[in-house]
Image: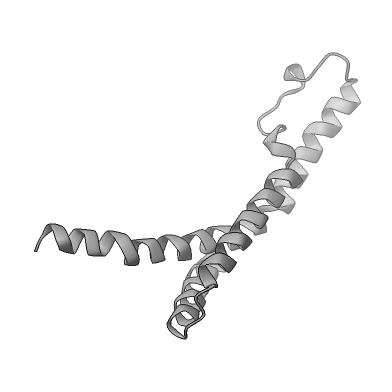
Length: 113
């Protein structure tokens, strides 16, 4: 949780400092990073096909050992890849804050002026 908090402060700070210094490609970099990380997370966890699965839900062609191994492997993958979310969410947060700054705040100001 602490890593998520630190990254949620650090990533938007780096984003806005880079943008203010004239590095206009920062949006593209953050978006590409977020997309690549999200896709890798999805594939590593096998599309979350094992999340919440019980042995009864798996095909009868699998042995009991294969079913248990599949379920344990799915749990292990979810646990081992949890750290990725501490990078992915702050990247998305930085992009969302930029969209709020660029579009939502001016739109709200326009409504009240």
